[in-house]
Length: 250
Image 1 (cartoon, one colour):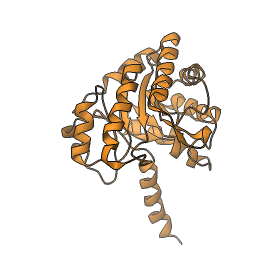
Image 2 (cartoon, rainbow, N blue to C red):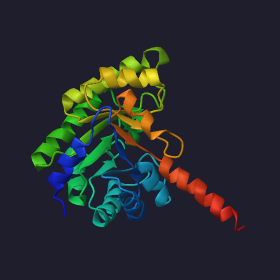
Image 3 (tube, rainbow, N blue to C red):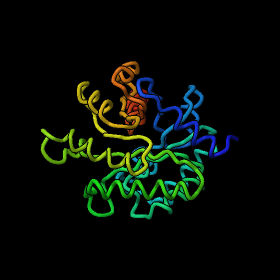
Image 4 (cartoon, helix red, strand yellow):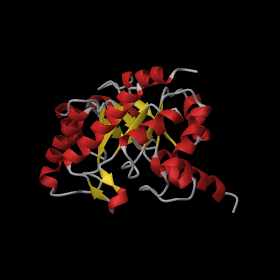
């Protein structure tokens, strides 16, 4: 078994702007084994597909303990570095989140700026940065460089005027970078010009979302992307194929 510190170091090293690491988004031991057997070096665990897999809604429709139970099943099945989507933090303190993830064998996290436990409000920019900073301090105290992927939902929630949304996202994510993030995630589907601006103006590796059965894997590198994950779209693609198969037997 690879040590947890080695896994954290390996995950961070995979983030190379222009040569993006593809991190399939999985939700259980079966899907994790599927991705590792296909040759992928590290994985993400998505909140949306995990929630769907146990019949509960996304946006913190499951508890952190329920998520950790699933993470332990995944890390017990595969020896690859795992990054976990912890949504907005489940209303918990950074140290509780970090300790839980490390205990479950995870070495990375996504933290979004939507506070689902408070009606889905968006954290203020400095408030989100402070939360990111708390996660970094907690990871440092635990002795594991957990890879912190700071996400903003400005684009997917279409917050404020479109005319300056990119400017506001860049300013918000720069604060998160200063606070100790390792990766920045302006989640959403962006045109090439916007994606190039994000990757060129932000100071850390950028995560983009890919639709695995539609996007060209080679299209992300020229845009400066360092990481591609699938969100719920891998599970959705498998569901579509399953419906085709099952439909033949009706």
